[in-house]
Picture 1 (spheres, one colour):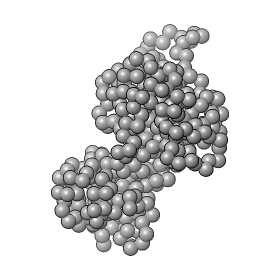
Picture 2: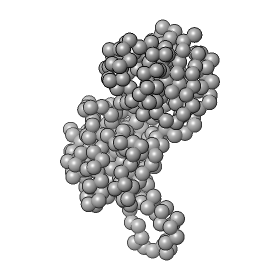
Picture 3: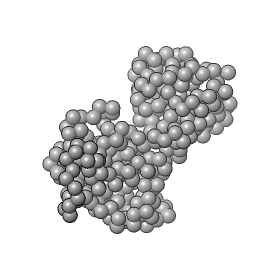
Picture 4: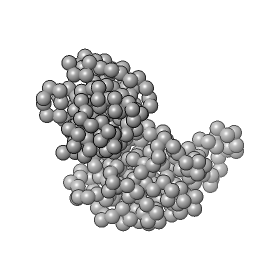
Amino acid sequence: MSKVLIGRNLPESVVDEARALFDVTYRDSPYPLSREEMLEALAGYDGVLVTLGDGFSAEVFEQAGAPRAKILANFGVGFNHIDVAAAEFAGITVTNTPGAVTDATADIAMTLMLMTCRRAAEGERLVRSGQWEGWHPVQMLGLHMTGKRVGILGMGRIGQAIARRCHFGFGMSVAYASRSEKNLDFPAERYGSPEALAAEVDVLVVSVPASPETHHMVDAGVLAAMKPAAHLVNIARGDIVDEAALIAALEARQIGGAGLDVYEFEPKVPEALRALDNVVLLPHLGTSTLEVREDMGRMAVENLRAFFAGEKVPNRVGG
């Protein structure tokens, strides 16, 4: 029976399913693996179920030498915390869990869009403070989303799910920027660059995978191109947005506001960002429902099962 380490705390049903298939060591902790723990995992197990924050860098694989582990099954669609090229060079397969996260992440995007455009977090703080003096006609005027134009930066599965919600649910027109033209079941206009897209939309949603190519894709230039009343929403990865440039734009009221579920140096959130009223800050809730986390776990376990059975792995990333 293959020896597997589950590196983080997961729903009980997922752990039970893994135990029925493998010789499982369960690290019941919410915190990422330390460097020493990563090295021990690579040396002592046939496979490791890992997730966000478990930083398997090229240096870790180099230090591990010839690892016993042959698969890292990532719990999550994003895998930028794993150097996939270095893993493959070390003879390790890397997998992820796409599909399971799509709708839940799109729902959080809509939550952030509504919260930032309608100033919901700011309003909730006002009520809790006891300083709300009652309704009046020009109090906390926000951006009416219905009928506006949304820009999707990265029209993959999640981007398309967000666009459908915007178009069919809110009557919004859709624009997008991506590496290739997409065959979509709703009308959408493609733009050639993030800057060109940013200039034409009322809400810009970041939905591209994190990679060296997308690092700081939303920089000071993209933010400067946005309309003064436009809002930025990021549900992808924090380092796609230049956080310092975003803080500067929000402090200067250069854009209407922002909604964030991810941060460049997560879990660190700068005091300058936390002090601003024109930004909504959520603690990376994109896939945070029991059903979705169970689905993600089952996909990760199935990737492990297929690998050790000598079958084609359903969700291999990289080569």
